[in-house]
Length: 345
Image (cartoon, rainbow, N blue to C red; front, side, top):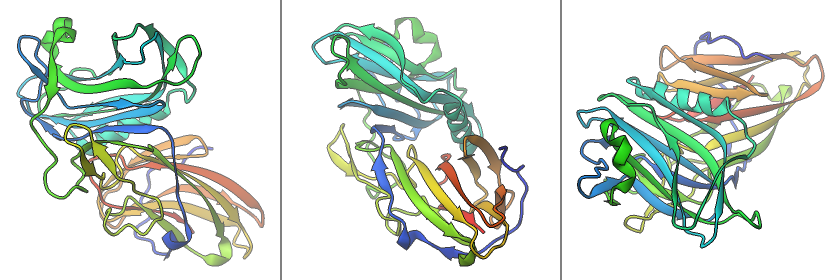
């Protein structure tokens, strides 16, 4: 099925169901880079000691996610580099991945996720590298000054002989496009920037145990309009298991990502028409003119609301007294940590 067009249906209302839903933390390790959110002089440079935006060792299946605004005054690229620290030859496999660049900060995130959803979820062999060697697994196109670069990549490193998952070192860094040919010779050290303000701000970097959330939800037409609120502020979130704390490997501080950038939600809905009302609708709504990226039973939609009271109708299904299952995939696109409400009505 195709998602409905990006038509505004005005403001809708319903009953919040967060208290009855428990998310399951799943997926691989999340390697998250969003501090400094704005890159000024935090650039790798082979002619002197450079800097990396974030680095940590990951134990196995992982996702790297970065979201950075270029204000360095020059064109830059951002790289995700893997280093074999396993002591033996290591295979690198990648699954879903995507990058995007935009001067509209929300569109950069939404488009990167759209590109991510357009790739294979299966592990695809990339290369084999020796112990101590490095490999650039992801790199953006040139990011102009004033634009945002976003990247997501799911990957796993394995022992080339046994096939068992092994740990590898992940480094995310930015550099001027003109030094690409000699960049790998750079000596990298951590940026001097540290997370500012409370540890739950969106602008953090860190390593988190899980990159995904899942839940199974039953909706009955006799219950009327109901919604699940995701991405609510960390301090006020009432959705069980939505957030988890991580550690910034550069300073050992505990951090939490407000809004859960980099985390995706897979929600399996069982829709039961027991009233009956025959036709049900799916809506997405929040209090900010956000950009939405959502997948409904494998069909992807990317839409922007035109006002803070708009809802986007993404699904119209005729149940006609039947029961149907819908799998809704969602993530916060980036650039705004306001919550989003996912409705069935």
